[in-house]
Image (cartoon, rainbow, N blue to C red; front, side):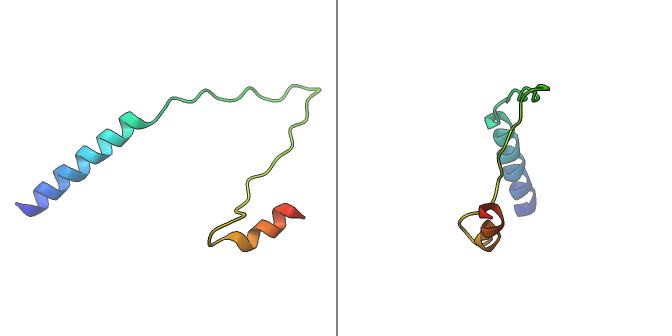
Length: 56
């Protein structure tokens, strides 16, 4: 019975988290005369060693 209770609890949490997700609109693609510049690098945390690549 404990396993069924845990599965029920996990299922309820999963369904509740789906409701918390927001619907995001896709960004408009860059036009022919527009250039987008940017990056996403880990500048802190356990993978911060790779942040040097983004700073280069």
